[in-house]
Amino acid sequence: MTIGRVWRVAAAFMAATAVIMGAVAAHLPIERFGLPEGRDIVREAVQMQMWHALALLALGMGLRTPSRLQALAGCMMLPGIMLFCGALYVTAFSGHHLGSVAPTGGSLLICSWVLLGVGFLARHD
Image 1 (cartoon, helix red, strand yellow):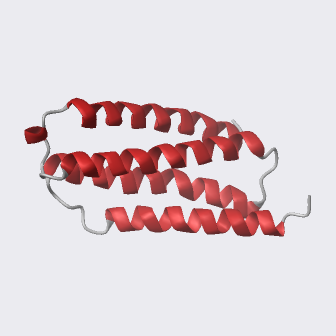
Image 2 (cartoon, one colour; image 1 turned 60 degrees about the vertical axis):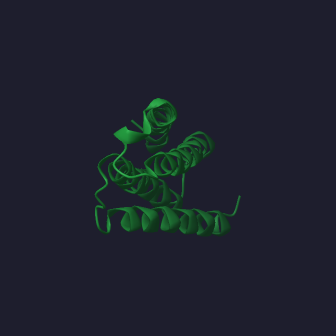
């Protein structure tokens, strides 16, 4: 399986999960959240997850032969989504913060975008 196909498959499942979590946030009674602002936290996670799922999908569809930097960017984006959004979901539903999990995921996402940009700058096509 090519890296582009992995990204496309992962992006599709990430997008599906984002839609599911959006529905949960919209329909779950507020008292089922672990924090009063739990619904808002889930909405933020859904937005971040969906935007990055679409970016990963575009990356998987648009690059036949990604550079090493672009490949690294895509490979960092997937765990970044999972760590960042997953930590927000846990916080929203349980009320417990997972320490540095969300910031670590966010840092991976930031780095993936920087690497992607540098990878595009370095390409000569």
